[in-house]
Length: 148
Image 1 (cartoon, rainbow, N blue to C red):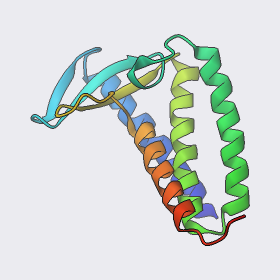
Image 2 (image 1 turned 120 degrees about the horizontal axis):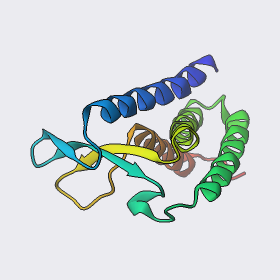
Image 3 (image 1 turned 90 degrees about the vertical axis):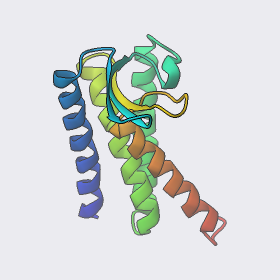
Image 4 (image 1 turned 60 degrees about the vertical axis):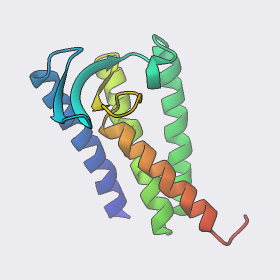
């Protein structure tokens, strides 16, 4: 079980380190091409969710995050012996905590990865961990033989 807590910690640490790097090196509301026509490193303040939906609803996100962490913690406790469930949930918890730290510390989430080849929201390490965790969890549920 300690490996999953290390994974959660690693996600939060990487997320916060990349956000700090972007905040001190990339001017606000600008981007620097990282891989031309594919990926740019941006510095965006997101006061809402994807595409800035629910902008300014800080209390809502605070409550939803706490509820999500309680549910994820319960799910982790129930399934930690199954490595694939524990992996997905650990990534989700790490990502949730990473963005939660931003909302508490500065009042918004710092986003930095901008896909240049598609109209997609700018995102961060925590968002990526959440997305990969959800995909892993969905795949685990779909391949699970148990129906309980």
